[in-house]
Length: 148
Image 1 (cartoon, rainbow, N blue to C red):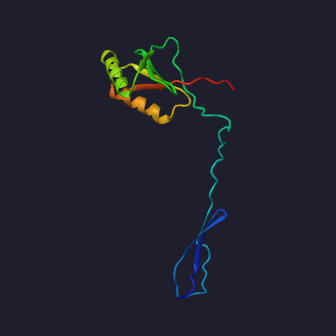
Image 2: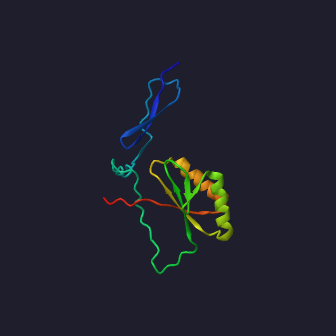
Image 3: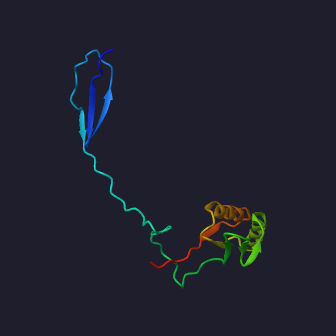
């Protein structure tokens, strides 16, 4: 078996090399193409001491804007029972049933989810799924505003 001649494509400061068997062991062709590539823009990493920050600008409704339907609140504590509109709910099945009762009266009602910071994300999704099974589809996540 002979040596492998090398053909390369130069991309910026990197060389992409491909090899193929040949009976001409000493032939080394010149690069077949040169391509200029701009580096990707640098992104700043999030601040190390921050938990999670949303910096997407949003347009909040003005006080004269009308929001259809009332909002229910679900509190998800790190320990203890869920609370729906100030009343304890023993489990997800009972939460679905209460959501069904609310949806029977107002199927456009929104639900604000307020979860303790120590609650696993999976638990928040389980609560949303239970409310969906009950017929409610509009959800918002409540957060505490932290001043820098």
